Length: 630
Figure 1 (tube, one colour):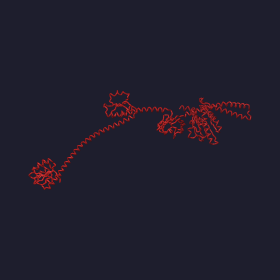
Figure 2 (cartoon, rainbow, N blue to C red):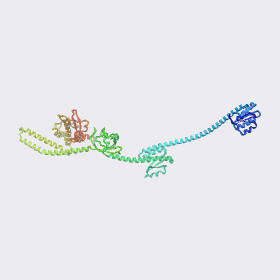
Figure 3 (cartoon, rainbow, N blue to C red):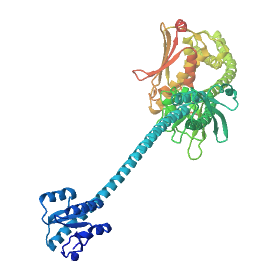
Figure 4 (spheres, rainbow, N blue to C red):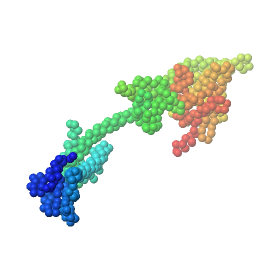
């Protein structure tokens, strides 16, 4: 049984002590209740005492509103019970019962009291928690508000920081794109004018102090420009407003100044390097010989202007290509190429004149990477001059020998001719040996002509100025010299011309020498073919024709001809398909040079009969004058 604080006010002896319920009579009730505060209070009401009990119970109710009051009554009417109910709101109103029923009733009162007590405590707890929740809510709302304010401030700071970061990026871009101090100043002014109201930016070197004269009346901020120990002067930010610069703005402008210091240093170094680069390029391009820098794989890295002029292309079109492909149109490295040394190359590419180069090559690499410097010196003209000097010396020697021989032979030949003519004077012409005497005279005359031709051919042609000559005689002179050998080896030379005289302004011996060189080339081709084919009859046909615009000398032979792959090279200096010791390869080169000096040209072709044809064309004087006029 639940034991709790309970009191029963009654004068009856009902024995509730076992149940833990005190019993107090009516006379002692007031005093008892003064010192105690029972949770459940039972009252035995009678018509005679219910008024006093109502007053006592109201007092107890005010003392403890949770107190459970049980009304046990005898003989109370409905009005009395209604009054008790309205005033006291008791837990139970029932008629006086036996002990067990009273115990159950008190037990229910205890349960109800504890329920109310727990409810009140729960309500108090709930109220307390509600109050705490309200307090926490208020704190949370304050915290949220403060947090929102902080977030708003942070957002504004972030927005400002992001904006300044973008400005800083823009500023850095402007700075590092600049190549001069003025470009840096203009770039900074453009990047900072909107955000910081910068009117202009000025960079002053340490030696420039006149800026102080104009800063007194203008709001400005000065920052020292330094990089390491180097002092580059000061950077002045001039404001467009009278408002002074804030600490954050000064801090930002200080960061800009650091970047400017590095940029100025870079600009000075760049300008210095550009000046060195210009000097190097000027020196590089001033060299008249073609120069290129290549890597280990023959790829072109850099060339000079002479190289570009040599190949006739733009610089960017060949960078990264192979040097042997660009220079000589080859698909593999040149024969005899010895990079890193001094060597000699010949240009063998089709469609180009044969050229000879002295190549100075040096490896400029640092060991980990090869970088070859190659300078090509064209020595073709030097070799031509050398060969021509040798040829001239040979001709001069030949002239000296021919002159000596001619003078030595002229005397006996003249004596023989005189004696033969004296003998003819003593003869009547009817003698049996008279015809033999005439043949001897012809032979001596022929010897005299040969000696005269040798003398004429060996003389220095440049001792005379150009004069009107007969091209028919030029060809005949070349044939006579050539026939000294061709008749002995069975080669026939035929000369077809309709005119006896074809005048032309030139040097007789030089033109005869040119025709003779072409005939010599034909003669050698015929001899080589006869070695392979026994019984071969070598033929050389010469034709001289005139037209209204030109004079043409055609020389044809039925020799081996010329392969189409090397036809473009036959006039190249030093080019020969024969032994270079005996054939230096200058005969046709000299012939072409002489013809060009006389305003002519040479065409090479193969006709329908398989004959190799050299056509030497000379313009008419009136055609030359028209060409000069136009």
